[in-house]
Amino acid sequence: MSDLDYPVLWPVPTRWADNDHYGHVNNVTYYSYFDTAVNAWLIHATGVDIRDLPAIGVVAQTSCTFVGSISFPDQLQVGIRIARLGNSSIAYDLAIFRDSGDSLDLAATGTFVHVYVDDETRKPVPIPAVIRAAAEPLVIG
Image (cartoon, rainbow, N blue to C red; front, side):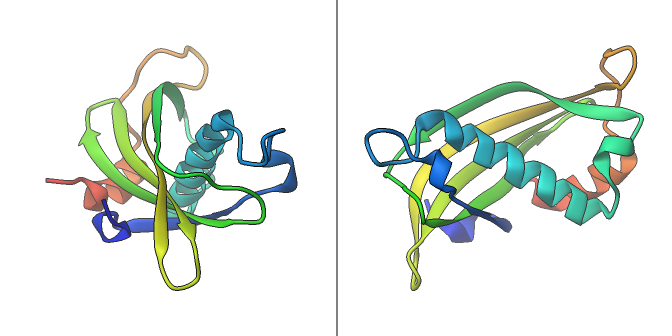
């Protein structure tokens, strides 16, 4: 797996507080990096504040496979591509790479599923058009 397999690489820095007692980034923090990268990319790609849309993406599923260790002050790039674009959900295929200066080293792979729901009723609704338009170019074969 290479960074070239992902049409978007979103920068996410590690933080001092991300390290655990063992001197590496705690496993739960990887999910925060996924969430941060996907939502920051969505805001950038759509040009709107996604929190103001009548439908919101709630996380219905996540997974992470750890490949290599990272720690503060590593600089990261989160690879983003879309495995499935449904009517009301988007399944992201993600990777975390540690930026070593001359290469990006794979640290983890994961999935992240957003299900779009009405911001008041919390019932599933179609993906907002502005989000669908941003997501379509990232769908993998």
